[in-house]
Image (cartoon, rainbow, N blue to C red; front, side, top):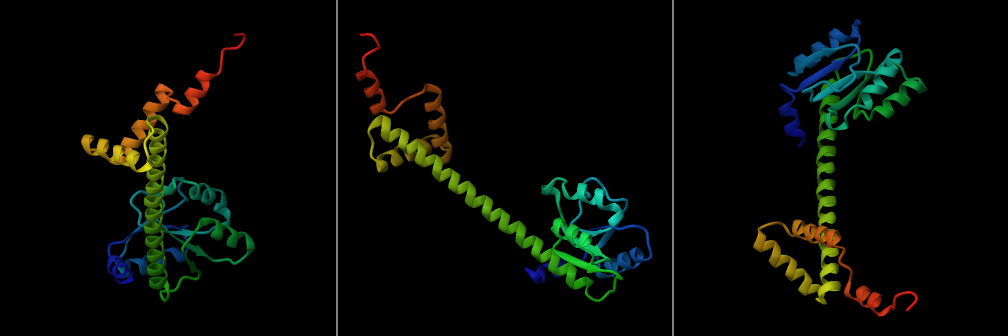
Length: 214
């Protein structure tokens, strides 16, 4: 992945959220020299810049309120975040930790190390995104298995089927309707809830209990 990230640096859309001081022109120049497409943003926006692959965010004590608001913005739009810091006091370090930045660039900004930080940050961010996708797929698969298990339990309780027969029944119905088994199972559960079907044993027990006062 690292080699691909290096190749993709040229044309990478980088937004620099940084006040207009003597450091900013140097930072922008270094990024453009690497081949990045750079946009300058200030003051700190309320949301993540649209279309940004990477954001370099200056951790300015005077902009703390705006920075905290930005960090709470829609996480699905959050790009690779690199913090730019010029102080190492506890308040600044706390904000860097809260930001979830995957790399830090120190001021005064120097050309050496910027490419390394950019590459590492982008690699870590892409790996995290892939990990989140894998977790989401596993959670979806687990939820599907739990739905199928619940549907099997309904068939077993109400039709007296074995677990294997209940599974095969769901499978045949899903194939006949050309839908995933998870969807077929969910439909069965939904229909059962609507009809308030109770397990056979529960119904039998209710029938055996005489009405009050008889």
